[in-house]
Length: 90
Image (cartoon, rainbow, N blue to C red; front, top):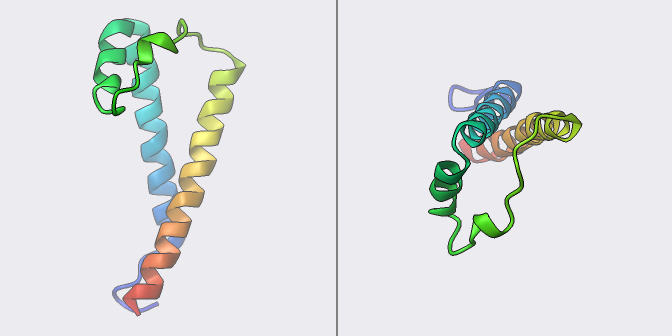
């Protein structure tokens, strides 16, 4: 690994943790103020009215599964990104 190449697993873990924190903040915001949260996230969803598809917040097995998917998916996306980066950094 030359000086321009970065650690693949560190990038994967950093992105996974970043996605997890964003997801956790979103969940907490939705519990505290669903209308505010839907307005904020709806503002960058390119015309999708989130109020029409939103459901009441609930912390259950689906939420835990979502966190697992976010962590695994974020890690894999980070690894894939870093593999591409390292190819171009050679």
